[in-house]
Image 1 (tube, rainbow, N blue to C red):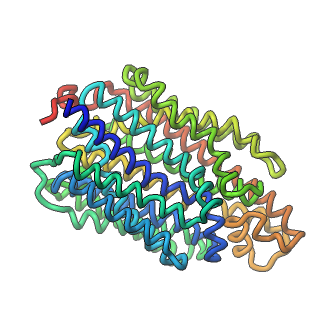
Image 2: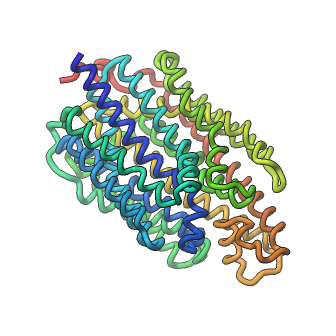
Image 3: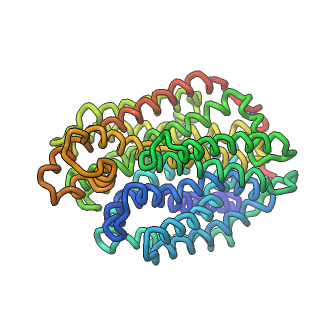
Length: 501
């Protein structure tokens, strides 16, 4: 009975903090127009509100997982709760866009500790069929958090103001801290001996340069010396990271895992859904608010059709999923998300109602609900259970890194396509106009009546291109999953289900 109670409280604490840290990726989505008005930020400023958080998460998760294996998963989890809660307070108090971005990065440092230990804590407490049930609950939490964020953000922004999307984390953090200190037991990898500082620095610097280069590419020119040097530097540092990890006795990322077909498949598939689907959400919110004229709450409510299925499907299908090959669940889920995005692209137009998005949102929600738990389960199967902190970190690095790169790349494409559409429109600085339309929709050119219709057409056309890119990425992910995850048991069953110590 005591063991069951401990498992239950561990799962509650992990799901509560996972929900909190992932909500903070999407909760800002519907608040972006309000933040833009408060601070006068352009498209790149709005992108950094999302990417300062996701980029830091992606850069630090691997190290946090390694630290958890070495110093104890509960200890790192508790530290993450404290840092995340304090970062949330600073976000709410921010007085300009730069302070908000810095506070978002601090939030993410705590979030990395929470996310890196999530699967490890579940893996330590649960075995056999119970583990898959716990992973289904965690997967439902992941999907619901990403999808519910816009609704919660809309409610808080409309009723209390955008700052409350951060203040609301404080009571959740206090609750999680109490549970962690009183209910969660400590676990660690006894073979972990040192922290991979060189790996952390090269990996974090590489991700930052790549995302920065993508975000600034339109403004500075994709063939400019600074952008080419930035992107080349990012790629070079990623190569250096691989070399550093190969020379480590206990690397935070065991790059030899890339020799395993199933590991490559899980990693690429996770990246595809993060970049192709979740990276779209900020621009879907701008479309709903600044093109369709909805309030933050109204935009959040329009995400509900997807939210419901993202949350319900993992729970409703958990027993079926336990008996179904991993590759089938992931492939089917990705195919449905891709179809959902295609439906949105086919039905949306510059003068259509938001209801045209409804079929696509529902189909995509079902697909996300099917694939999320399967991806989480697969991440735990590809490494020795003693290094589950690393497994959790790897999977979540690809997940959050995908969001960061997806937001940056899709934003760059949005601005580029809008600029191309407006070339025949009388204007001054075409780049500045495209930036305004990208970040504010038709609201940004409302004072110039002659630009309203061209801006609307340009934004909707560019948004349609984003939907196509997302659909292609999910289709690629489905193909990758169907061809790489067919191994029934990537690690021996005995290792995956051994009793807890």
